[in-house]
Image 1 (tube, rainbow, N blue to C red):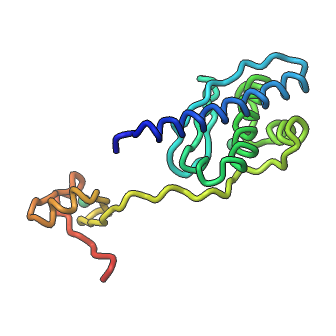
Image 2 (cartoon, rainbow, N blue to C red):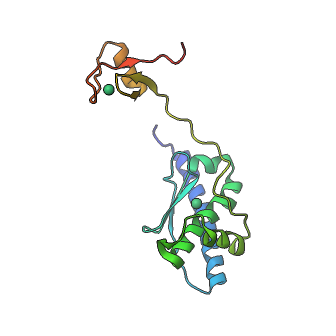
Length: 172
Ligand SMILES: [Zn+2]
Ligand SMILES: [Zn+2]
């Protein structure tokens, strides 16, 4: 889908709001620890079931725009500090501690005053429709396009067992 200028403006807003909040979170940590943490770069590349991820070695935070849109306020006040806290913990302890261990929980509580939670309550983006096929050895998932070709007579063979894949109609 081509991006309209309207979409791009909305994305820019979301990213700027997230970056602003991340900066606030880094400053709070600087004040709390009396130490200058290196701010992470932020982007909206996160897809799938995670609201955000912290890429510690890259010092990069990826946020899920699909989930941001559902409730920007909630997203900014919970997901951003959650991910920044991962970076803070990494810059203090390296990778010697557990991701959601007591060090991370302490940053959430003492620096941000937030109840530490590993999970989020945002809806997950819809999965792409897939069509189930089977051979003699396993299940296979076809995209709609591949399924259409198979329906038109194209034969697909399993690389494992060399048998022809058969469509499993789950609606039957
Ligand atoms: Zn986490
Ligand atoms: Zn097979």
